[in-house]
Image 1: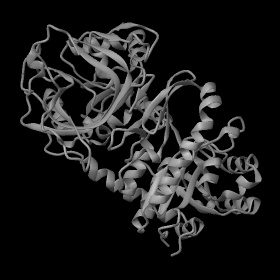
Image 2 (image 1 turned 120 degrees about the vertical axis):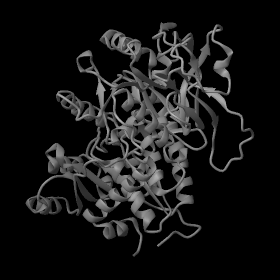
Image 3 (image 1 turned 45 degrees about the horizontal axis):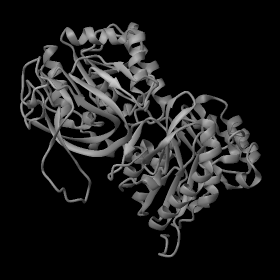
Image 4 (image 1 turned 135 degrees about the horizontal axis):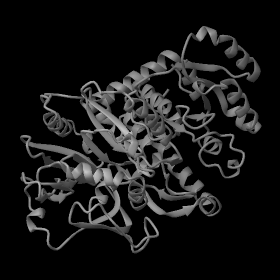
Length: 541
C-alpha cells in the first residue's frame, strides 16, 4: 500500500542494544528491500556522530551512513536525511554541522544544555519533509535507547520514534555475548510507552546452528511478549563502507596479525597511517578490494615494515595528527621513505602536512598559530573559519603511465593552500605533464560538479600537488582512489617498481557496490520475516 498524496510516509525505526551492533547496515538493507519492492524509500538519522562524512550533490556534509543508505534507495542524499552531524575534534569537543554546514565547535555539556533544545525542531522539520516526499522512511537510532543519563534530551532514539510515529525493531549483536540479557535489560530500562513501540527483535551476527539457539528464542518471546523477527547470520566481507571508528579499530587489530606474517603472498603492501583523528578512512576501501594489494593500518614505528606505498589519510585535526606523527617517530620514517624513492600519497589532511607550514591564526584547528609541515612542497596551509564542501570532477595523469584519467570525488576542508612566491607559474598552467622528480606540478585539473545543473564554464583549475615524477602526490579530493582507471594505473606503476607486470583490469567500484547492496538485501530477506515487518510498518502485500 503506497501512501496517498495527502498522507505522510509510513515509518520504521532500527534501534540497537549498543553501538556497532549493525544498525547502519540493517537500515541500508531495509532501504534496498523496500525500494526493490516498489516503495519510494528514504533513510533518516536525526543526529549522527562520525568523522567519516559524505558530501551531498549540492555540497553539504552529512554522515556517511545516510549517504550509503540513500544510495541503497537509488536516490540523491540530502541534509534532511541527517540534519545534525557531530564531528569530534578533541576530548569532549565536537564540531556541530547543521543541514550540512558547520554551526560551531561545542563542548559536550554546552551542546547538551544550549543546542539540543533547538535541535529538536530542526529534526522534526527535516523528518516531516521526508515523510511528505516518500512512501516509507527508515530511521536509524544511535547507540542504545536506554542510556539513562541522556534520555531526558534524546533526539535520536525513542523521542525520534515518537516524532515519526515509528514502530521500532531492536537489534542485538550475539557476537558480543549476553544477547538475551542485553535485549531484556534494554526493555527494562525503557518507559512503558517506549517498550510498546518495540515491535520485535533482530539478533545479528549469528554464527553456528540456529536450532541450538531456539530454546533461547522461545524464552525471549515468552518473557517479553514480542517476536524475534530474524536471526541474521554473520555476513563476512559485506563490501560496503563503514563509518564507525569501532570498525576501524577492528581493522587495525586484524592488520597487526597481517603484519606478523613473513610475506604478503607477492601482493603490493600499502601502509595507511592510523592518525588519532583520522577522517573519511573509506578513501582506501577500493584498495582493500583489489586482489593484488595488501592494505594495513600503521600506528607505530614497529609496524612500519617495507611498504610499497604509504598513504597519509584525512584528518579532523591536522595539526594534532602531525604532532602525533613526529612524537611517534612515524614522521621521520615517512620522510626517509620518501627521500629514498618511496611512493607517498596524502589525502586532504595528509596533503596539508606535505607543505612548509600549517597556519592557524584564528585557532580553527588547534591552539598553535603555526606548525612546521613536512616541507616537501613549497606551500603553506592556512585554516579558515569557513569549510569548503563540494563535489568535484576533473582529470589526472600519472608520469610513466599513458593517458589522462577522469576522476571525481568530493572536498571537505577548511585549509587553504598558499603557494610560495618562488614557485614557477607553470604550476598553475593547464598541463600536468612532467617527468622530473624536482618539478612541482598540479595533481589534477578540476571543476565543481552537480547533477542536473548546467555548468557555466568548461575551465578547469589546478588542484593538489605532485612531484614531477609522480612518486609523491597530495590532493583535497576524497574518493580519488574510487576512480577505477586511475587507481589501477597507480597500482600498476607500483607493480612495475616491484618488477611485476601491470594488470589490465581490477575492481570496478560502482559495480561491486551495487552487487554488495543486492547481496546484503538478499541476506536480510532470507533471514528475517520481511512480510511481518511490512505489516508492522503498515504496508499490505
